[in-house]
Image (cartoon, rainbow, N blue to C red):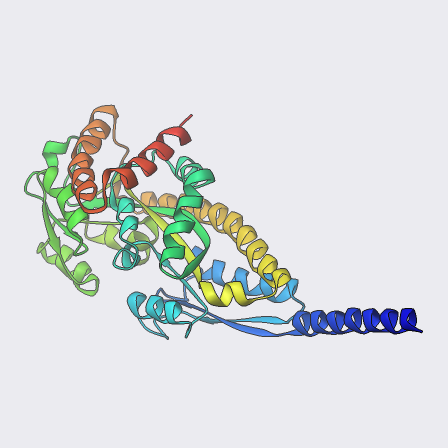
Length: 336
């Protein structure tokens, strides 16, 4: 009789565990994915968010739903990142620049001339260095889900550029970023922070002589109408990161976390390939406008790298040699 009671008790425990597991796996989630960038124009960033929604909802059989909020619908970059930390927004999609105030180590991505091309950049951001990135984000209460280099900041200017000396005195519009400004000052240019909405008119009227942005922006804003040259400086890699509130991520059932991880990995491959293709398309379109396109020769490339050392020194002072050494080592190994 005792044996039968024990067996019945074990059966009840197993049944309860099964029901509990079933209830957990049946749990549904609605995840907000916010970004401050535009949803229009078939851009790689906007298309990637749609891909994430498609994959997560499909893989979960609809148990995890993703709501996309772009165009600053839930706030600017700083606001949505703070909301994600607090758990009010599940996920945020943005570049590293607005995250530096929350994760100081990310200032290393403002060091110019780190990567010769996007393939090297992607390799350099994987492996052991990716684990280091995950630690930094975790320290801010965020789970790093995607981290992809998709563009470069390039330079357009109203005069031919062949040597670093040609930048002397050039008024170039930059973001209000001390590291970016230091790079241009080291080249002899005059960095001039300016609201982006005012940039086209400023170039047209000669208030500034140059600007630096990815091809996509150069093309979509028609800067080729008010500039003479495009110099493929490739000076700053434009990286898209997607993060989730860490507590929310850890609180999801393991199978759901895997769905999110797998979906992000698939999206990363899709985004990287799409961005490279779009970059090539945009560059071809820009060339057809008649804008002169310059690929720096070895001498100009060396001069740009030398100027970048000024910014590197500043960032070492701000975040420490160890952090900078991490990315420099990963960048060098990626070239092999």
